[in-house]
Amino acid sequence: MIQSYKKNLISTFIKNILMISAFFFSLTLIMNILEEITFFKDMDVSFTLPLVLTFFNSFSILFEIFPFIFLIGTMSFFFEILNKEELIIYKSYGLSNLRIITIITSSAFFLGLFIILIFYHFSSNLKFMYYEIKNNYTSDDKYLAMVTDNGLWLRDQSEGSINIINAKTMFNEFLNDVSITQFDRRNNFERLITSKKINIKEKTWVIDNPTITTENSQTRIQENMPLKSNFNSQIISNLFSNLSSLNLIKLQKLKKDYKILGYSTTKINSYQLNIYVYPIYLSIMVCIASILMLNIGHNRPRVFYFLAGILISVLVYYINYLINILIENQKIPLMFSAWITPLILLLFCAIGLVRVNEK
Image (cartoon, rainbow, N blue to C red):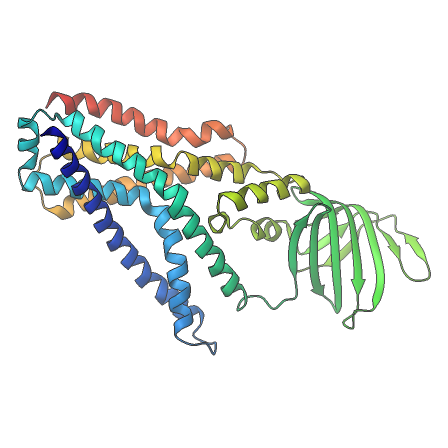
């Protein structure tokens, strides 16, 4: 009989998670379609294009807010079984509060595994397609960037010249061991500029002691030389930072490219770790919601629990945001950063579970 009620608990829990997911997915579609229509309002495109892009982008957003969906979905689950007085029935068959929480948090963990193995792969591929399509309407093809075994390659067009730039490594605001091949608009060779170091903090680059080679001569300049560009260090870093559009295989490839370039892989490592601990994170959010629902009064309107869920979600979001800033600035170790939020929430759960089990 207990096994039967266990199945009923899991099915009711999953039903509420799917219901809240559908609500937030619909909300995401509505908000995104307005944004896409605004983006394309001055372009001659069919109405279906914003719809397709909205669809492609919404699954990735849904993945990001799943922890909060699970929290609010768990509140909805308890609201349902409390209203139907099913909790009393479960307890009469020997299911304690702690046992019920264990069942649904375990379910959340396995749902989390499904999400990172199947759903994330699906959503990241759609996000990649989203960027591929949208970039056709945001780029004028004057500049491109890629990483190969030979380092960073940039194609840049400014001041009437086409620049093909190769840098062996990039560190902070500097490109190292750089060669810049310049062509005119008809792709005729103009000159080759080489330098050990270029400061790219601003869009006016500062080339350190360049050597300039033309068809007839080679000149060494013993001073800094400016060069106008469409790139700076921040833009180059952001070119490869759309991690949500990369599945686990592509993330690993990007990390390899960063290592070839000599660029920090901290952001990628942090993102990967957050994905790996995702099922645990979802389980913790379910546990928190369970503790709240079993410790506070049950005669409040449903909107109270919904607002409580939003408040907790915002609090957790800003904790994560602060931690991510500390990671990027290398103020805290990477491994510690991936677990600090779950550990804080687990501490709260441990205290709350003691009180719940006494009820």
